[in-house]
Structure formats: structure tokens, C-alpha cells
Length: 113
Image (cartoon, rainbow, N blue to C red; front, side):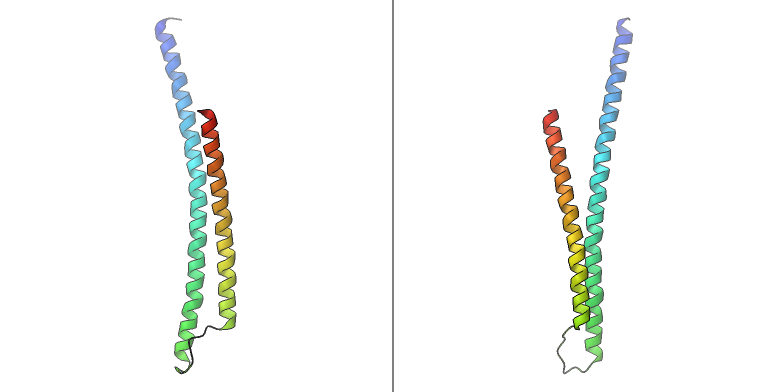
């Protein structure tokens, strides 16, 4: 092989390794962003459910006699509490998974260096 062929082969190998590294890094970002979107969706859903139940309670209290206090009904507050608890628990689990994944990624990059 002459010098030109060796340089060409070396550049092709460098190109392949850089391409693989970029693909792996983009795959990691894709997984992390998917987890963040799920967490965000869960938080937004919890907020929406709580607003739905709270708005219904406000409308009911307006329609009733104004002498009564604005106390939410037992069923709607129980449902709101359950839904909020479940959704926040799911969000917590996803956040813990994401933190664990980030720690593993950080440990992997430290070992490679």
C-alpha cells in the first residue's frame, strides 16, 4: 500500500467511528427526551385533572346558595386526590428511572476516559 491508500483507509475508519459515536449519542438523547416528555405529560395531566375537578366544584358552589361555604364535595376531592397521587407517583418513577439512566451514562463515560 502506498501512503495515499493508508491515509484514505485511516480517514474512512475515523469517519466510521465518529458516525457510530454520533448515532449512539443521538440514541441516548432520544431515550432521555422520551422520558422527559412522558414526565411532562403526566404532570400536565395531573394539573388538568385537578383543574377539571376544581372548576366543577366552583361552578357547583356558585349555582348553590351563596350562604354556604365553598367546600368541595367529598367525591370530587377524593377523585382529584387519587388521580393526582397516581399521576405524581408515575412521574416520580419516571424521574427516578431517568436519574438512574443518567448515572449509568455518566459512569460509562468516566470508564471510557
